[in-house]
Length: 298
Length: 342
Image (cartoon, rainbow over all chains, first blue to last red; front, top):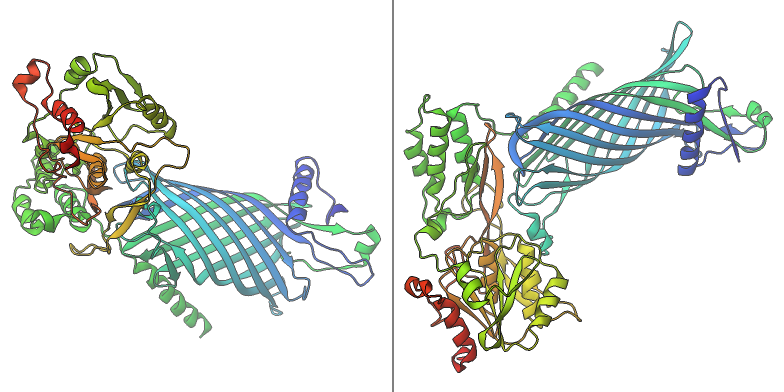
């Protein structure tokens, strides 16, 4: 199998990145191109970004104080039209590894937060005929979020482990337009978990008791009253060629309250990275020229 | 119309977030005083056992607050308030001072002199491994001195020590002045003295901020050391004093119910509430007992574990000057006599 970029204008760094990205994308879920003239090609829209911003951390299991600091993350996402109905359904996979550090109001203690998220979503695509270039998407997403908060100054309760599996709503407004001759793809995507399951120890329960074998009452059904999360992503892909420059804002609000333990993580971050759209070709460039290309994003 | 609905939905969504309220205090003496009182009020676990009326304590100390009392004065006031709990696990930590409640041991005879044992009983001929000093005493009695449960204990070290004592008639484990440490070391050591799973005790925790909000006690068990490890089934004496505290107190509370084991010395110092840490706005740390641990019969050991019947003995200071540890002598005699089995 050989790979080719949809647009062939990239050079240097972008070529190197494209090769790496294509390899990763193909490893996760190989895209396909049909052999016949009526084939539909579903390119993968993938993006790798680095985030940096501010974090607001609260976990009353560790401390009643609010910690403020920085937020950093590496994230990946891929979107692709679904094979069974490529004009209508879009699949999205996301992964994010975040590291946050906050300080207490007296600035004499630091709290670390390491967090890994993986999610998968399916969205239906709607066209807005009155506004050329605008497309709306709406659907559902499910994901897992695992991590831990660490406060070194605490003796027997230095860690608050986090784990959640949620199911919720997601949607996006995608607007493709041009700034002079530069194509730009603007997207706003909120994600709102509705329900799921998440982990929390009891109010004053030490992890030593869990270690001794008391595992009762650790899993909790999630709903908006005890687990509220709103993830906002605003991206702008500047399409210079085969590879795009992505500039984005990521705002993530997570607030939970269970067993009288309140935990919060608010993140506001600027994201920068590369994105692109890649397809795989089964036989020749001719088959690609005759195929209908259904892009997930652009 | 659509926009109005959207705004209503978003307002409803955001209102859920605001439900998760976190209490805040002002960054002044008043605010920090309220914070430390509240943190203890919501997490401390022995108000009832110790008969402490925490609301009354608030009133008594709050009236002593003064805007010009200074940082040290404020620290001392808060430390004095925490001393009302009469708990060795309660501390207030600042960059310039850490408060300790000491009366759980300072009001009692110390009953231990390390030099006495090292010089007159071990004759400085002892080995050290994994935080344990060990050697053979007169009449072929093995002796292990474990000074802190903070020292990691490896399975290999225990195998090595017990192998050295293979020909000994009996064993003394001296945990006098052992102020505690890591609870997992308790299980590691006890596992060498049992041949089947035992009920080690019960643990519970706060389920909410109320003084009576506790979980049902959870029974926890210890298993014997895995096959191939050295175990000890001959007579054992555990030597204790008032400074045997926290994890060491827990060790004694488990060992007291094993066959072939006697507790000799003074009542232990207690400290059966597993500590929980928190902090207040000025950055000072607060530590307190939060999870009570009970022994295998459900008895609280916050006030310590008593010696076995007929085994209470203090160190005679006069005889100590002559090189005699009366507690250690008592233990050796007990191990070698028929009284041990009565």
